[in-house]
Length: 95
Image 1 (cartoon, rainbow, N blue to C red):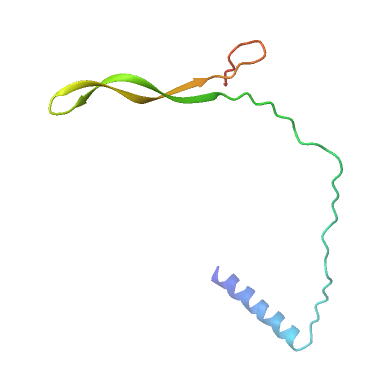
Image 2 (cartoon, rainbow, N blue to C red):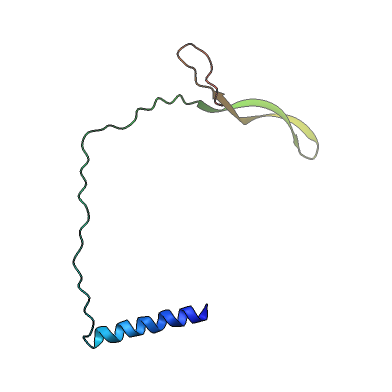
């Protein structure tokens, strides 16, 4: 493996030396990117049925520890999810 790397290195040095001495001339031409045109088309249509999420509060009686325990009514967060319904009135399920 080292031999191949040394051989490639020597070949690169030979090419650099030949170019610098004028014995090897490399002709290069400027390149250009191809031209591309896009006409027409349209974006895909998407009909998404999304669930609605409702946040709220409800009064619940919970035991709150103090020197003794008493029952207090406090406001606790609630969460209710309404699943999407299709045109037939059925709940949409994902698989």
